[in-house]
Amino acid sequence: MRIVLALGGNALLARGQALTAENQRQNIKKAAKSIAEIAKDNEIIVIHGNGPQVGMLMEQNAVYHEASPATTPYPMDVLGAETCGMVGYMLQQEIKNIDNALNIATIVTQTLISADDPAFSNPTKFVGPIYSQEEATSIMMKSDKIFKADGDKYRRVVPSPQPIDIVELDQVETLLKADNIVIACGGGGVPVEFKNNKYRGIECVIDKDLTAELIAEKLNAEMFIILTDGSVYKDFGKETQQEMKLATPNGLAQFTFPAGSMGPKIDAVCKFVNSNKGDAAIGSLFELNNIIAHQSGTLITKGEGIQYYS
Image 1: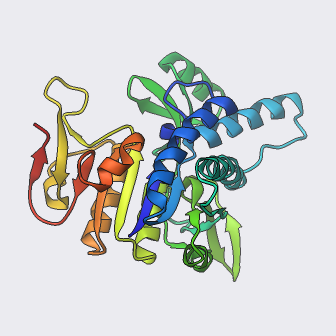
Image 2 (image 1 turned 90 degrees about the vertical axis):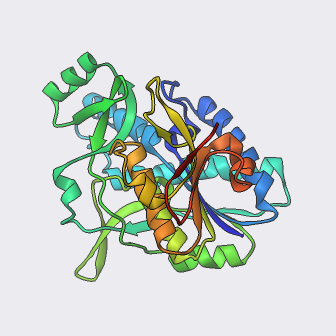
């Protein structure tokens, strides 16, 4: 079975955890174990998030610029490409360490977007570390950065335009056919515009779940899985919360999910299911085998209604 796995940046670096290479390495070891367990019997494409990682590089850029004003910060598309190498390298190495017989390839991919996308007038994508409301307000007063609430904390938000196409799609397909686990479209892919017969980077972050859905459709995946903190919930965080076992696009349409977190995930899985390519699921990174067996997480499929875990 051909499976596209979308790994959230926060699944690879837990919320509130220090942005160190060692912390990321330990989390990636756990992710690698889950991926390796299903890799022998399936074709796997891994798309990882990069919110914490690219945010850290942005913060480092800003500090370096203060110390050396002549050194201008690198643009976000370049930082996005850096995180493709950073996370891809660690994933590639740790999967190989678990099973040396597996072939793994990381490819830096460009994702085509439109510079006229309305997302540029309403930034929603969370990047970087978390801050208190007071810290976020202080930073906004001193810069052009925009922060929004993410739970009870605040994080920076940037534009998140819709992905249109994957420039290196043929290369990903070639690697899959050569029996590789392919790590591609890291952070949603490096955002580029094609204009006057040339590609150029755009200052934004593409939602990796939407890019993962796009590549799942284009590569005819049979299952699309978003791995994050856990399942989809009704009334998440409230005393009345209920964990969804099975959901349908029609059933999910009755709920409103946060635009900066679960909202794009729901949009992505519903779009894939409605494409009639296969089923989708949302669940914990550490329950991957059980998600595939429909014993954990939330399965999204055609039909009507919602079923909850008892």
